[in-house]
Image (tube, rainbow, N blue to C red; front, side, top):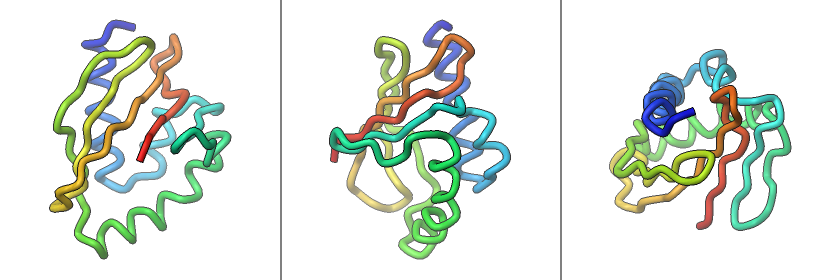
Length: 112
């Protein structure tokens, strides 16, 4: 999949995340998608990712860290590197989103 297509797909994914729709988010993840933070796998599959979103969104709303916005999107091998800001939080985070050949996310990699 070309990077321009991945960027369009990623913007739709971000809209689903910001709308707090579990059903919509699920459509963007391969069943084997996992989250790696600082080299540790925190979620081993789509199911273990999905169970945390309700709590994550509640915390973000409470801390006024919503919506999430992309500051910069850069193509990388098999995906995108995205610099993100959560609402009014001045701290930026960079997440690498890796995709399979079907355009589904297979990994989120974050170094804090």
